[in-house]
Length: 238
Image 1 (tube, rainbow, N blue to C red):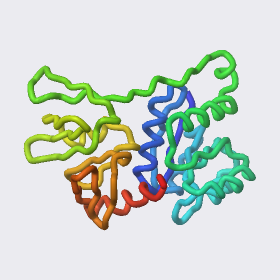
Image 2: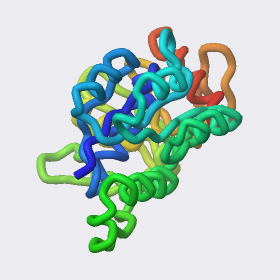
Image 3: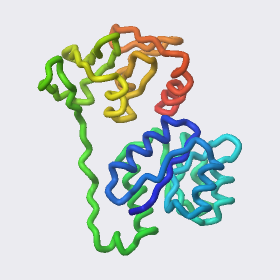
Image 4: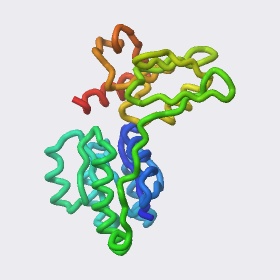
């Protein structure tokens, strides 16, 4: 098992990498952090084999991190700017991932790391790409009722006082699952929480106007707490 650390100053981005690590059989998640100095401390204590590292970190950039690290672990860079990859390869990184990162691309980079870190395991183990789930079972409005919903059908989810409404392309589903529970179960991307009461599918956005997102004819507010992270994700997906 390759011990991995996800490092990004945006917790949303590190959570995506953590999700990918957890679903990859030969990787194990040591932790996530938004602090490059904390990550460096963990590496220097020899607790980490592989770091997924954002290049643009405050206080200590990814490139500076690599130079200080001095080869104590292997590194896969993540960045929204492809021009940074050249600097990364000069410092002998395993690979770089361009945001937004797909699982397929992540997995290819992880296999490269496995070949370097655990060559014996790679030689004797055929490691196919794990099946990617493209649906969720949502608890219905009765005790033993579960509704299968394809991710691609979900437009947005609204948390109300006593229940949650899941809006799809064809129906509205009422569930008593907590909004936070659904947020944990849904993949990021394409799903993103933009308000204390709303999770949306980024792929279904028709327009963004100030603090309002439009999905079909529905206007959905963007909460102040979520706005900065949301707009950064949108810019990275352009």
